[in-house]
Amino acid sequence: MLDYTDWVSRRQTVVERISPEIVRRMAATMNLDKSFKERDPLPPCWHWLFFNQIDPQSILGEDGHPPRGDFLPPVTLPRRMFAGSRLDWRGDLKVGARIEKDSTILSVESKSGSSGDMVFVTVRHLYREDSLPLLEEQQDIVYRDVSSVGEREALAALAERVRQCKDEDFSFAKPAERTQRVLPDPVRLFRYSAATFNGHRIHYDHPYATGVESYPGLVVHGPLLATMLVEFLLREVAPGRTLRHFEFRAKRPTFDIGPFHLHAGAFDENGRIELWSTNNVGEVAVDGWAACR
Image (cartoon, rainbow, N blue to C red; front, side, top):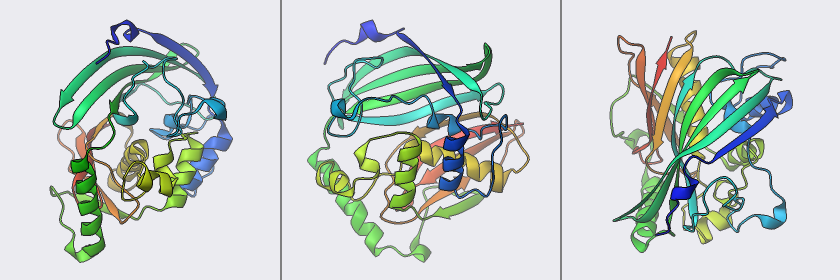
């Protein structure tokens, strides 16, 4: 595999205004009956709506992603996925504010295993307003080869299990204190893609997702699942608390072929709580934890 050592420590700075219009569109996508005013705090994880790469249509790849080799290394493996993040809030990003995002590539690691070749890229993002640090994120991106025959067969088997499963038959990988059922639909996935300017076709183009990528349906965005988990925590599980840390890891995909679930454990003495989502057959899809104050 290629050596990407030279890309480590590469930096990039982007400045963007937290547009009230984009925030309003996200609120509608999340079905929130709330209007946001200038200088209102931006809900946690909504920063992913902003600072996204904007390239001409003519240079996008077949999958809808921008070309590689600008800031991120030119990894040749075709599939790119958001693998997880670790986030620490020091203050609030505010609606209408001009925010500086300073990004640094911390590591690029190539691996080979039973699931094929993979390249993991970890990027640290620092978000500031007027030089004041508000949020630090370490984000993991994974690049993978095309799906294997075994992976495609496993996804076909998952789809068959979903077709045969009824709500009362659901069993989950681990018990939870609180659980919420979510029924995904292509309109919400399209609207989140639009709000984040994410052209990745697996999230809104059903013929591409099923015919080219061999998925059983549209893929629910990893960041959307993480955002839903945080929303579930702050609205349903612990209203009135403030999030100070959240981290998660994407373990397996979730599709729009049936309901999935959000789960929360119990707070420990340090204000830490487990959060996870399960996919369309009850397996852990996004696994994480949060700390509140």
